Length: 422
Image 1: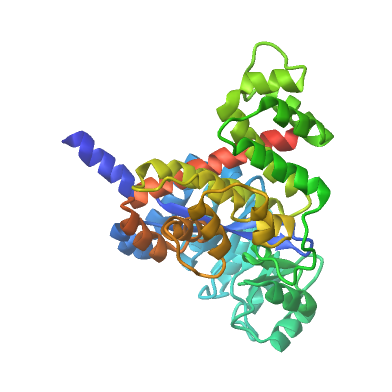
Image 2 (image 1 turned 90 degrees about the vertical axis):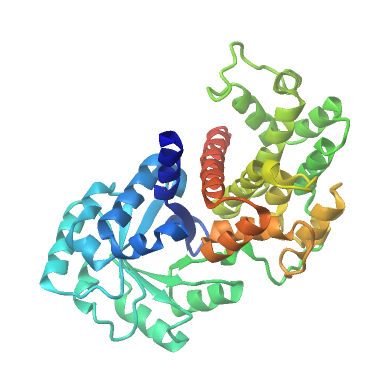
């Protein structure tokens, strides 16, 4: 009985975390804002117990790892007035950007804390900044000023950028949800952007997949066959020197721990075996196809794929390859091509094909609850996660653990492949 109670208690105490990417003008990832949440049973404590909230955040960073959560980039963490005054930031590494909420008064005590933060090597962001903001006295300490472009007009946003932007302080546009938002914010002078706008592709002109990318799609098609032909796969890999190099580096990496070196493509394929070969090709092709895009596109596609793979055994009446659904869900943005053109070249089961084609339109298929859960968990839409979890009979704890494991796996996998770049 005590063991069950202890397990239940540990499940309750583990917070759920999501991350929202922050990108530069070239769409390269600069960092992630971490969004923490407790289960419904702990919402009261989360809102009122500052020490408990901070402890939960620190525990999460320690358990999952800041490197995993932010893939080696900076972490932006919201900080309330009480958290600032109690100086809990000193328990966090200096890679953290302390986000000061809009409700924090710019009094002498807060200014003194800001000075200590800067002396300690931390960076500061002023969250939800508005014209005539009451935190003017904190501006000299700010490395980032964040403006919600859905709340502040374009004219006011442009004026704020002109007033506050400097070499020491960067202007960051929040809630950039579409390509149009991105273009408008760039025109206003913002240099950093927060949101999932880069997951979307608009005004597509190219209707065909480039030849170099078609090879990777042919590889995905080859490993989707019921009878995998190693000779066919070897020939396709040999067409792409970069992929050959990545495979040999991967096979000889400490991650696999093989006792003898792998000296040829065929030797590597035979050692991997069909199951691991399929996994590696899916991962490597996604990374190669996305090497000129935002690193978060590839990372997100792998997290989505692994998350779906981990929850699949708990789902009833689902026969589809959910890993592949997650992996391909962002391929339109990665290849900058319509999903229909991409899927023409891949043999997929009807449910997966239908879901990938309707994923952006809101159409419903048998896989929609799983797809919607994948997207909601990524975005930290906790209300929808809870609703879909109940519909699929998945506990919040199981979904959180699965997502954390997916982030760990994707970070490790991409780190190995990145190190194997020529």
